[in-house]
Amino acid sequence: YLLREMESSHMHYKVEESKNNHFMYWTQKSSRVKKWTPPTKRLGSMTFKTWLKIARDGDSLGIGAEEKHYYLMTGVEAGRLVARDPNHLGQFVSTDLGMFSTTKKNFFITNVAANKGIQCRFGMKGVIAEAHYDGGRNMVAMLKGAKRYILSPPKDCERLSIIKEKAHPSYRHSTADWSNMDADVRREFSQVSAVDTILRQGEVLYIPSFWFHYIISLDYSIQCNSRSGSPPGGEGSHDIELCMGGGSTPKRKPRR
Image (cartoon, rainbow, N blue to C red; front, side):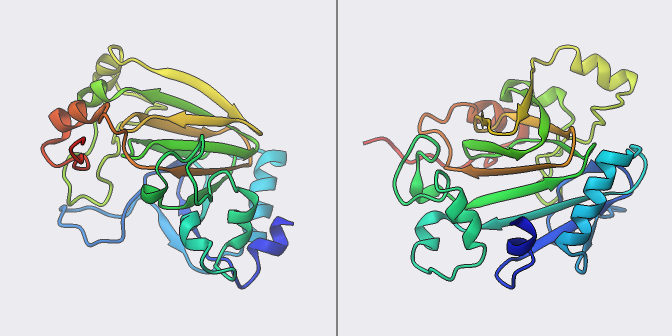
């Protein structure tokens, strides 16, 4: 099913290659950061079929942390936009995940107008997504495999080695290697609060706005998530503003 749908002309996806199992998000915008180089390479030619074989081999044969890893990403627009076009790209993702691709408020999407669509991540065993925070209330559904999530609250921002420069391509992400901390980082992290959990196939995890999350794929995994805007009460935004500087969180509309 996935091979047929992902290889169809109606799907767009990208694959990133890392020299090891660490993946740091970065934007395409040019960087004024001196000596900065992209942490991963974006491939334009790898097919889903090729990626899938590599991922399955990683499960069956094993793969070392310092070997090349590949991370596949795709997404579709919000349900309110998809509903206007029956031939929309990635339609099968929207159809299969109706709880996220909705035109009406539900348990998972509480602010339809602020919903930006569905993002899906296909991870090889061992892939690490470096710690970061997002502004939107985030619902994460595990469709295959399992991932370990370590979540920390906004109040611990100052201790997490977060990139604060807005012009940086990896703004909002931690530069600390959570899998191999040096002594200085370990001292800071000893004071950090955290929730450590494993999300398995068929489960949904809620990540509140501005909470930091560090993610490890425990095997070949498929995860899709959708966000629905910042909380009306702005929970967590004050701590982020203190840590990251003014203008780091969305402006809140005054309550009527």
